[in-house]
Length: 209
Length: 383
Figure 1 (cartoon, each protein chain N blue to C red):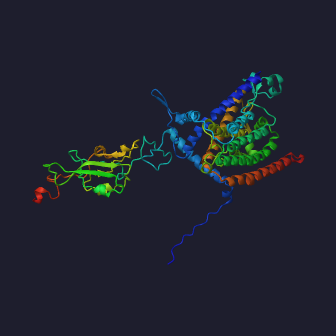
Figure 2 (figure 1 turned 45 degrees about the horizontal axis):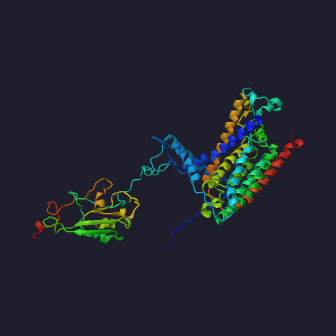
Figure 3 (figure 1 turned 45 degrees about the vertical axis):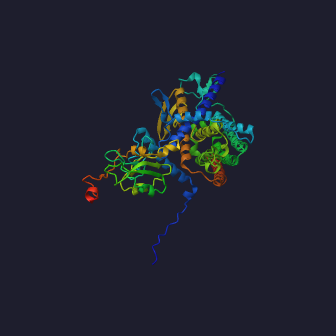
């Protein structure tokens, strides 16, 4: 079955195009229009807010860093480690993120909770949690891999440009001090500690051993 | 005595003005291009005095650039010709500065009669004429020919800079500059022949007088106006005729190897050329210092059966004429910058074709048509 063919008309070069002068005048008209529009906006102070209305007519400059274009909610910024209610990291040191990491920039040293802690036997905690932000490719696989919502990239901030390499190695304290773009250090998903009534799974009390 | 004092003053004012032109035009160009391209342009350079911050809408950037240019390392290529290398920026900028000497920027001022109504008898009265100051540095008989001679010398600077830099890019830039400027000099000169035939003079002040008494040159020589403007822009070596420095091919062309103030001299020389060529176009085609309907006696409108005569004192006419000249120049400079930021760069062969195959024949045709028309108008049977 023959497909539909759209026949394009070949542009014809008229004498006016060929002489170039008319086109020069047209071009000058366009640039003059923009010039007077821009100058009018600058003089009258009616410069459109390029952050809110990026497609508005006229001057489109965003005066970075005083003005910034907001990032999308799902934009992947610098990592942070989310907190529990008691301020300890939600991370259970399962090593899912460091396993998923294609850049191999996450190092976790897991540790057992001390004898008698109610979390002992259920989960471990990170003694060390280090991300080499220079190796990181900001793919977000660690966030996808995390079963506990413990690592997130919702900070909305860039990597800062430090002047020494060691400053890019973010340790646990540094990662836990970073807040999300809404200013919280927690996650929106509730955390249920073993032993709490809301805990959905099997635990020592309900499992019967 | 009066001659020496006034001439010195005029030279100082002209040179002082042209020396500042580069800094101001640099700002104008940045801001104008920014406005055209929906940007706000440079505005970060700040002078801090205590709590006060002066940004002056980006004008401080010109000062910052000046300071930067002064303190840059005055590096020189190890090969090449050192004498010519140092001479080239001077040769490039001096002709442009010289050109302003022959441009009349106002009518002759009769000092003793500042408050009187203009009387044509003043010019012929030896006593009064001795106490008069023409607002033109050098009233040369050769006028336009001097302009061509000196403007032609500007090419030597670019060519020498390219040659003495010991750099292939510079050499290519210098070659292109030389061939381009020589080509357009021809079209430029011939495009003005028609105007000279109509004005019956090559003196620039007499050209303005003719335009004041009859009509502006752009109306009797529209083709020559377009040709001359094109050639003048080509002579300044700015976009769309900037193949001599075409960044994408030649780094910076003939001044690739120049740094600091020497580079600044080339850059400001370009701006001075823009300014001077605007003044030239004003003088030859836009009535020079004449404001529409203003004669030496004041406002005169005698068309369509309407007769308005509003006499002004001599000094007011001079002032209006001078401001009118400045206004026309500013407008033309504005348009030249607008052209520079509107049109894309021509290819080198396109520039050569435009110069030799389009402008030159058009200019010759213009001479032919003008001559024929003048012959018919001046023949005994015409009146």
